[in-house]
Image (cartoon, rainbow over all chains, first blue to last red; front, side, top):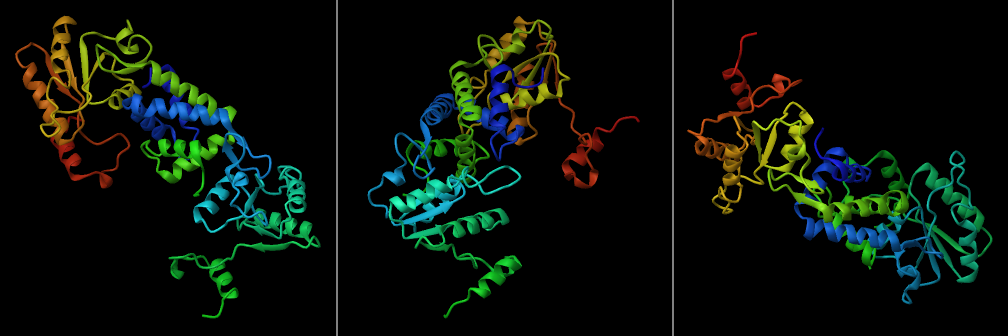
Length: 199
Length: 199
């Protein structure tokens, strides 16, 4: 016998599989839920089941949302002329938090990787090409992570789109807002210097 | 519009109420669940609903468990002559992980606090007294936290039990196993010195 039993133990084991939670913090989270069974645990379980049941990947952009169509693709106010290409739904959420982008998205769901056998098909790149034709897209913004894989994927997409009359852009690189030079890595400082602009 | 929408957003808000998770880590956890809807999210939601529905406080000891009676009170192999008094179910789990205690528990569910209007009634101390009579308890181990409130509660229980012919003990204080003196606080070192024993 070692601490919690049966179903409570199974619940802790499942919670511990979430990122950022280990066995110890999963135990604390479950204890807190047990203390607030009606106010927290029951509504959380219900909402989780509901989302697990109803969440779908949007057939157009790859965003995950609950119920019929993705809110962004369905929004009449969003510009159709611009597509922002992101690796992941997390990146889409991050872009939306910024609130500056008013167009539509294309979620790759990963990056090109020979090792993991992820090719253009898996990332929905043919679907992106079809959208560019169908929606009359004028600009594709490559908002991929500044990693080797992200940039390789960005270059592949840029090459594929060449000669289609589409403007291809990528996010600016430089000093983050509120960032202190002393704490920035050398690569970022070099990139910010290369991309310097008139004051 | 700012990131995830509707039910996904509500789920993130609920997850963020768990200890150790903030809005940011709750978002990461929900994203991971969305990626593993069938393998992780659905079973987690189901187990959570099941525990929320079936978890009960044991009427005898105050432990929380799923299904009829608490496993510890129901176990025929546990000694009835010893009761270990703990503040919280978390402390009971910690004691059980140690695996050294073979008796039964009494979970107070808190500590005495004039400010929060927590008196002996709220902590089930009359119930503890009744058990001591009924179960023929010979020893009460006060495994309360080494905080001011914990120790005040321990002293209150010890005084209440005086003259009932019950041995009252508390956990030893000293250097933790594997602990280095250099990293221990002064209070612990003083306590360990006062309680020194023949080598």
